[in-house]
Length: 543
Image (cartoon, rainbow, N blue to C red; front, side, top):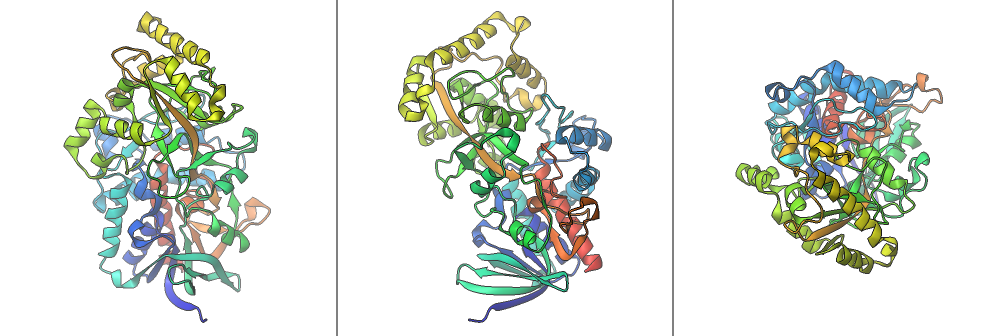
């Protein structure tokens, strides 16, 4: 059977935020574009559809209005501190500097032009623990979450004055690149709906996401210094972000770097209504909950508290002989602090319902807590520590090492410290809670030194947490115009492969790993936009 043939100026492989932005910018520049996406049309937008919608900007108008003093120099210093780049990482360092310099004009201003609005309170995440991170708040929340962001850009795409130059092909899986005379000039793949092969000619932009949708690849690239990967890792990435186009690029002598750098999360739970096998959700861990290991012991010497260093949380849990953990709290803490990252479980923000959002902030998200207590098997409820221990043991045979004595010791020591009063706090978790409550973005969502065993806050809740695969920090190596570099053994001599670009997570959000070891958060969605716009600009000028 003959292959179906397509032709355009540019072929975009992937329909997530980076692919959409690339196509939108190319239409603006008068190019004919075909966008191939493996998923169904109803899911156009990729993983960004499910994201919370946080974006990292430097010295933005929102920060300025809130009185937050930020600068390119300060953000660059914070980025390099958190990234801990290697000495010879030319492209990752160059991309980091470029991102910080471009974040306001090339991302924030561009989004505002396309009708995207941001919540006025900037969130303060990844502040740093043992390694300094964000020294000021930079996490700007899209009003409408990631879903609102992608849908607005899709609307702009479908209603563009040059929309006749755009072809969208869904359920089309790209499998290989076509190279002639050293230049990438097209791609091949399969129409999975019709089970028919296709071929297309044009400049190629890889926008297919990372590798973290493949748990096999996550385990194969697990950081060697961390030992064996956890036996169970939940999938919080996109089911089609499996790195197949990374393999296709590598087959054509493209450079793939730093796949052992990932942005996984420590607080994953089973999705009550999974969209695909092994689907997990990323909790925003409660600051006032006790974070315990598989035996019920508080992990130290530094207690685990969210908001400071996500990589530290994952690494610390994976230092345990058994690599999952528990959070123990009560219903009062849950109603005040509990949240799930993403658009799906934040409908008030996603649907832009201001009154419902304010109500959740002031009164807590009781509906979400009750839903998870009812439907998620990782939540256990009890009226005493003894009953909680018994129920944990009964939940699964592997929980037999969970110790009621260890649980009681952990909780009692923490509660007794609270009883002494804040002037005598000698517990790092309580100090960090006090620190968090000084910032208005955290104060309303953080309890004021709440004991775990409290008759007025019952029942008790234990949440079993697994490591959740999320984003690839490494990927296809690119220069500062998003051109894919070849795999010359000497990194200093790598050259662009003609006709081939990579954007978004596929490119490690720039350069094959712009974040280094850690992300300052909010840099993923913005990274998709900046890498895509740079690719489109270079294509328009030079291809």
